[in-house]
Length: 136
Image 1 (cartoon, one colour):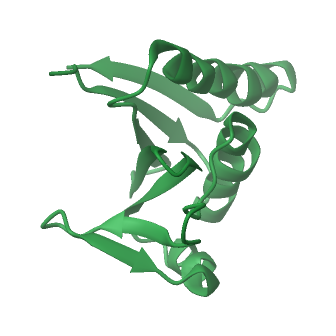
Image 2: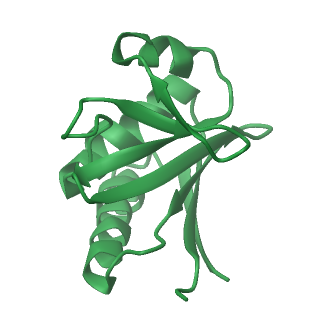
Image 3: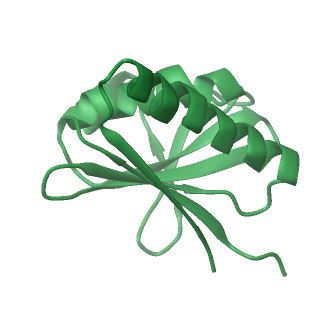
């Protein structure tokens, strides 16, 4: 049984900007996309653990609604990354679940988040992201 590994990112921005920053600019650099390459679906899970499909034409409306949710991101047909987000007082908390990944895959994500979000923001004096890694 593998040990769960979760990266929690606290991004101090509105949800649309935070989502765009994390998904479009960081995780896409690692090869992850919102739509499953085999069927072009965007998937999430119900509270009961059942897969639910989100219409790609409404994903922006879902994000704009400021509700907590989660989606699967896809690198290819067999490799995915589950990411959820939840509103805090002054931030959005994004949790990236690295279960089932190889050391190389997890390292690529952690390194890209650090270099593209945290370090780049520090150099630009625009730091508004915190990262915490939990291994249970």
